[in-house]
Length: 448
Image (cartoon, rainbow, N blue to C red; front, top):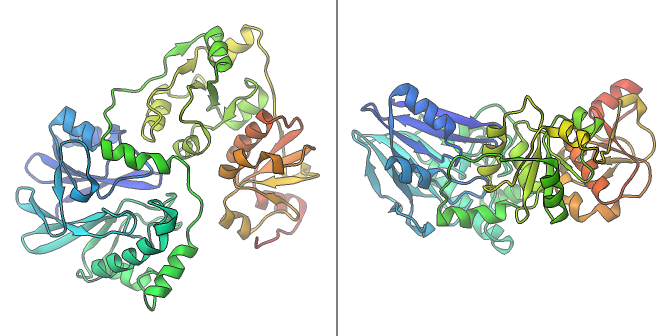
């Protein structure tokens, strides 16, 4: 078995893979535009990335395949049906690619997208593993509603056929999916990122569905909300994206004020406690953490300049790369000197009150995802998912209000949206529903 190295993006819930081909060359599969980890692993092993395979036109991140082609001379392998507008080897079902001892075979597995391919890695005629992208994933199958809402069921039926095809592989064949826990592409919670065909046949509920109709019903019932940037990136990936090293040019307070007056949006990436203690009025709170990119893509406009406020100990390169990999390639810059520079210029600031679990009183807005809310929430809490809040702020009463999520980071984002919309008495719970129950002895409600 060749050395297959999973490179996990915990924030997006995805895995890319590097395969050491044993001759100084490597194959990479489903890499994002943020190639830093791929570069580190390849350099550490003394490898040249000779091949970059994409299983499908990704909706949740920008592919780094074209960048590798332009800078490293990497051969890009992808579905011919994807009609990519840059140089690549267009593959169809059954096509083989000689990797120099090993072979990669394209398997048509539509469902997650129309042009989806899985890639079977073979040693001679012996299958070693399958890069299954968004078809068969650990414990599930990826969502089928990203191409078009009116084609969701049609693609779910295609997904059924694709999973049945993969299930015909030998039980010991490894399953190397792209989407995993934390992905909005319908991956269930869990720590396992890889599996085997035999294990999935035994444990994956969708592979154990009695028939196609049962499969479709179960898959469609699992579909939750997803960030709006998912609707843009597929086309960007079809065209192919090239990028230099993203950055955050420094901007003084006067320049930031001019940008904001012209319609720019300010994104504050500091921890929620620092944001609560003082921030630029109207700033959007999205703390820098593994999930930063997903929530940036969910809440920040893609068609307006973005200005960043960060803490002195936060890496500007990390902020810029997290933004770039989901399509925010041209950040206007950062407030040089952070909030200290803003206050030194005697400009207005705002604060947001943090409350403990035993201080919750009055109306509560819970902004977690539907399954989280259903698993247990404060009695009488209003529920609006954070991703839906920008279009539903008018449904939130203009009165004293406590916003909550699981820990506080998403709730602070919601509070910042409400404050921008004119709400003036918003507090954020530092904690989650179980913290409230433990502190007060209260009983959580369940269901929707």
